[in-house]
Image (cartoon, rainbow, N blue to C red; front, side, top):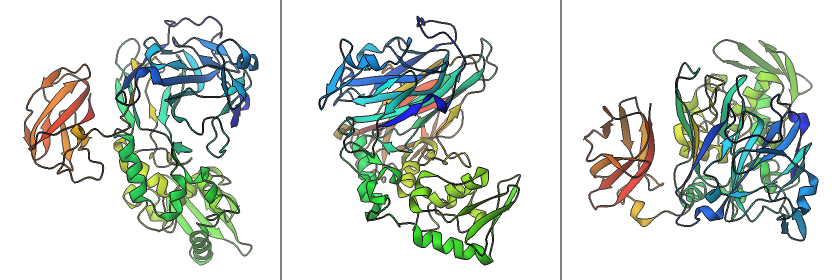
Amino acid sequence: MRKVVCALGIVLGLSISGLHAQVAGSFPVIFNNLANATYPDSQIYIYSIGMTGNQWCYMTKDGTMNPMSAADATAPGHLTKNGKNYPNYNFRLSEAQNFRIPPSVGGGRIYMGVGSPLYMTGDAGGVQLPDPNNPGDPNDDVYYDWFEYTYIYNQLQFGGNTTQVDLFGFPYVAIVRQDAGNGVTNSFLDSCGINIPRDQVIKYFQDSMSAPFDSCIRSHRVVAPRSSAQFGAGHTYANYLKPYLDSLWTLWKTAPLSFYNGTQHYIGTVDANGVLQFTGAEAGSMAEPTTQAVWACAGFPGYVGAALSAAMNRGVAGNGADFYVPSTYYKRSPYKNEFSKVLHDISIHHLAYGFGYDDNNNQSSVLIVGSSKPLTSLTITFEPFVTSTSAIVPEHKSVMNRPAIRYLSNYQIVLGNVGPVENVSVVALNGKIVVKNALVNNNVVSLKGLAGGTYYVQIKDKAGNIASAMVFKR
């Protein structure tokens, strides 16, 4: 397990003890469980942690923050696994109706365990997080994932994201909503995540990645190449990227790396000692990285290094003109982060955190609101683990067996990858049909007259089968 310590950052804020669930600046988290056919609410566990002041805390089911303590590992109700004790900071989804995010949280993580609680230790100075690199980790046989965020009421606006920098555990969607009013000038409503069943996600990984990346697929998760032992030093694919990196270093000896991010020009030339020297908008230098350094985005200096690391993961480092053109990503070279490519293929808006510098050129899943006032809500929806036969459109053209629904404007959505359509209905989250037999014109559905909010769009094919996906109207 990896330990996150206080040195990661200090969040100024509130007293820890006795934080009331309805304290000013807090906001609700709403959980929806679409995986309940396999895992009911009683079998999904929430393990929420973060920093307030300079202490690591866990959150109770109403959002109260309490300092972590090593003594909690032997407190009444503690957990035991493989002969070791762990504090029980978990609460079940069935108990989470009043869960709120407190007014001051740094390094916040909402861990979610499906089918099992999570096993972590910690104290006020640090937390031992699950480690996908360690086969002896107590969470190795647990389905888990997490949402990460930071927020300080009236100081720092909420920013949060899904992340697969280390691994993909299971699909879920996060909806961030901040309505105008009460000090908020501009409303915000957007989402990130993956909204297709887990078995289909795993199939897409299996069908889309080449043999070296097969080692990333495990029973309870798909790990990033940085977390796969087979890509580690001394193992089978330790030098997977070396031919690509060697070719770049040879190229940049005579044809310098040159890229422009819209405001600044960056140049890199490999000198006689094999060191890449950066000039232009930012100075710096670096030796040729290893495969492990590229996957981990480690040892790349400054902004220019972050951009270069991202380009290497995306397979576009050979041409500076491609650094800021997403349509070229993962297409220019056979050497690329195939794990990250899959995530971008299947994620909402095609945005994901597939590696550490995936925020370069705004390709990450991060959502940042415009005001440091509290959110109206954060909604987290667990997607199904197994595809229901009633949710498949047989003539669907996509390997995902789900229709693609893409936000087009404030008044329209567009349907993609669907076969012959019988009708389309718009359904509220409470199950009420608000638009029946919506007019479909060239696969475009009008939302005029529909109030802003979150809806499911249900598509029925000619055979009577139904598929659905989530859509958001501002």
